[in-house]
Length: 102
Image (cartoon, rainbow, N blue to C red; front, side, top):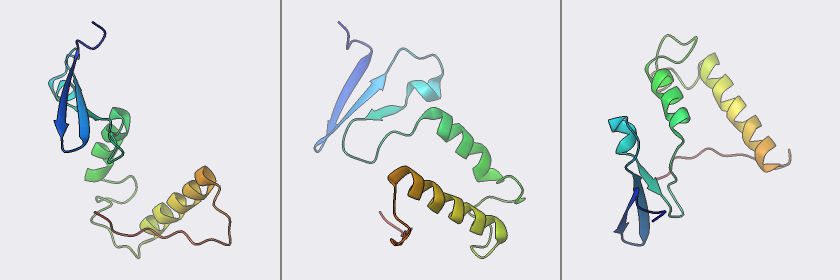
């Protein structure tokens, strides 16, 4: 009885659940991914990204449209590295690489 609001789908070895009890149709259609990855991103994060993907604060453009050599992008990259080092306790004698993946 506790799982009634969930619809589970299997795709390869991944299992997804869909919450049917929410009112907003976009939220209602969101899948919850319980496999190893990629993971479901919290709605609050997606909402912030939605705003900033159109115009990153202070940039006058999307972060995808600004130069990777610009001061704003450099600040974003440095902040990301600092945050990652703090969260994962990465020592200063280790390099942090942000690489394209897929």
